[in-house]
Image (cartoon, rainbow over the protein chains, first blue to last red):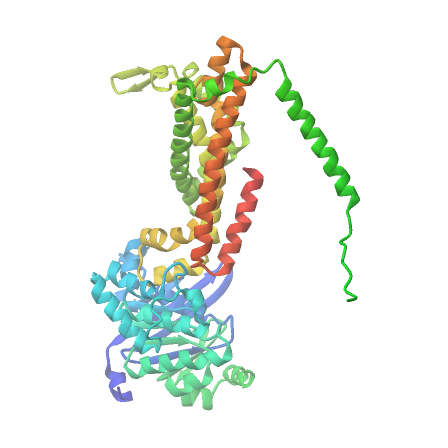
Length: 261
Length: 288
């Protein structure tokens, strides 16, 4: 998709003035973000800047203190009644989360299931897929993440990089409209980072809408349509990778980038 | 040519203690075997006595029923204890505190005498004498189950806590409902941690059921007591009962060993969780 068509594409995620505090600690102090269909947005920032917390608010793994997040036209996590936002039940949240894929820093593959079950169980349970359909799709996805033939393996038999690629396949099996990546390569040995990033690159090329929390500057520079730099719970700077990474305007961004190199 | 025979150090202290032990055991066996006060010939005659066999059936029934009830009740209590609702959490904590903190023997006698303060149970126009419902059997089963449920709750809670929090988060993110996440992701993994201590508790329960003899609940020990009350063959019948308890616990231990071998062999679990299981098992052994 060209940059211009992305600008006019429909909005997938709209976050408005998202606040989050743990007790007296303000982690998010009013985050605004719009992500359009097919866009890849990278969230950068020092640890503790709130980028992971914000990402987890998008599928309501984390509750927010105030603000609103709309994904594909649906208000996430709450029913709007008059001037109140009522939190949804676990079942209703589950339905909303089926359209939002998530990949975790520590993979979180289901340890008691083989790879095939890890990928195919959720579509069978919650997408009404037949077993045959789900298994066929799982095998396709395993091919896409370059792990053809490892369907019978258990997570503990795989390397970190392989586990993370299975985790990506598992999330994709639900046919999400949006993929969230929470530092997907931070728990990997350096030589395994590349194989995961190349799968993510492939996904971006196929037009998947992605929000990626990462410390991989080269990935952000090459793949991201937009880079958002966060620090201390606010968006400090936002723009194309070239603007933010190569020509930062804010001193805080510059200081962070100096530390990264 | 020059290879000389290597002689390991002899531990004279241990050898001396071994000799003393053999002497003590031999003396005990001699004393028991030659005692004119034990009529050995009556033991085989009571081993397969119909009354004794009935008692064994009831002891097994008590064990199975109380384990099943306590696992279900324990699972509910464990879930309550892990919830964020203060009333559910408080109830569960209070229950566990009370039932673990009072002796089982007291609880058995209490349930047996419940009609002293609840003489009848009224349901609408129906009024039933409490003694009709809470028989010795029901009192015994209630006491064993409710007491065991408190221990089971802690075992199951430990198992649920041993499952990495990321597993539940991943299930949520994939759109599993809370019930699906619990039944398909968290509980199956907790099971590996829960099963070994449940085995220990079951073996322990086989013996614990003998306490219900205080309310004459017709278990194995009650039957043995009933027989020796008539013929005064006290030691002989206690030996008969002990033989049967040993048979039952030995069989149960073999079953437990087989299950644990199987759990260990399939090893579909990263080593960390298995280590947690063993740690928990040891902890349970202490308070069980």
